[in-house]
Image (cartoon, rainbow, N blue to C red):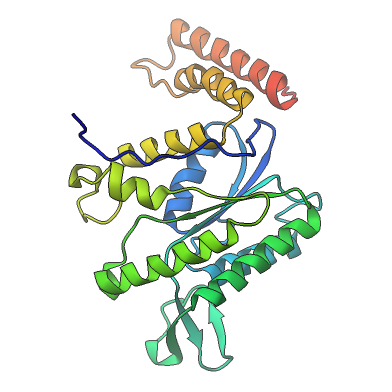
Length: 273
């Protein structure tokens, strides 16, 4: 008996290694996934200038990160772009798309939906900027499963459709892959118990599940061993005792820190004092 429709995801033709550098840019879903990489000691930078929802803002973030050195001169090994909507705001005074309206009056802006072609152009430019620094940068595209009630559910679905087609177009390129987070949430996790009380955002359990599917798709054997070895150390470091001044706890946490030191030296060649 089948109790869910499982999204079939073939293993990627390129794999993530423990030492790879990563850049996450996009919606709050990029924050959720990116935070899990940081928590697990991967070399990840997540939304350095805040959450970005549309392809134009993703491009703006990449351009700024390259210009100000947030992305090193050597570039990054992986970039993950999570697209939320094709809805943008144009500042009437300049005619430019803004990434944040900064709570200014709505009359100062004109709202617009980017076309599929414009979405493709923005993403193509973001990829070009990164590959100027590292021609081998791998790109992972995903569409956020979070619906935008603000614009109405039909309009939200139209926006997701434009993003899905744009992502599919870009994913035809070499070293670019599409990861179906949107499909996983709407098919495998098609139950309101996987949503927060607002009935729009996925629960931590849902994000954990999508992260597991991401690992299955992109992790090398080394990356899998890396995260498995780190987990017990992370749990030990995060332990909250009843008596933090006890000799037993001080000895326990000292051992955990020594294990962390050895882990970092082994996997990332990071030496701590």
